[in-house]
Image (cartoon, rainbow, N blue to C red; front, side, top):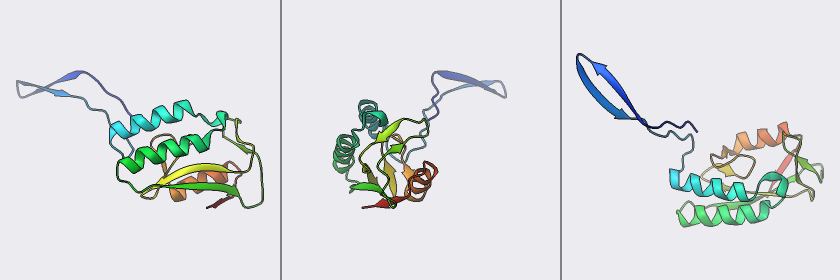
Length: 135
């Protein structure tokens, strides 16, 4: 997310025009929904290993917005039990992780409120040496 604030003055042919900088969000979600998801992920960071609670809360928010979400269970095709984030933090010690998919975008504490497209999400997991089976 790129944040701006305040006013900037633009001089054009002797005329002073004022315009307000706006917040630009990469997410396809409206800013209030992004903020709700940010709060959920702040309460349920990856090391807390509470992805089930985070997924349930995200599901409720996106469902209330009419986005027809679904909870996705992620397991490793080869049976890995321990999933580590790129920071090295353990985010699952059970071999199961939950995320929420809506309109082809997957949301969890690893993606943050902006989410990732399903192909990008799978690639991210593979880069973490998790070879996902999505249920």
